[in-house]
Image 1 (cartoon, rainbow, N blue to C red):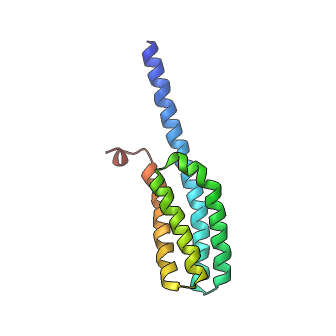
Image 2 (cartoon, rainbow, N blue to C red):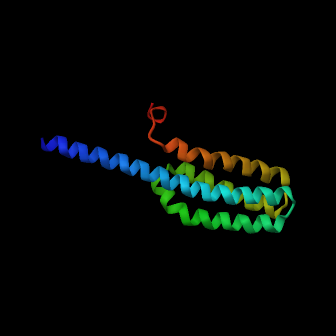
Image 3 (tube, rainbow, N blue to C red):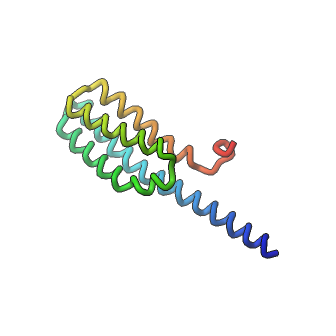
Length: 126
């Protein structure tokens, strides 16, 4: 009987942690996606200074979320996000429209997919 109770409690803990971690990833990714959209709008309008300000905000948000994401995700994912943010900022500074648009598109897809890929679903388990 004791083994059943411990197993049940452990299972419930894992499920709650999984739901909570996906919620955290989803909410923080959404915040960063909103800033990324602002960067994209500024780039489309060729407002490079505004885009750089938004890129700095994105970097600050990333630094705030970095610790939690490091705990929840594979380190290669973390490295890819950091590299992409650095590329976006560098391309904005050099005013390279095509490169920054490509990097924004890549980071956008990456941030959208992370919470979805971390959800506890049959598709993700198998």
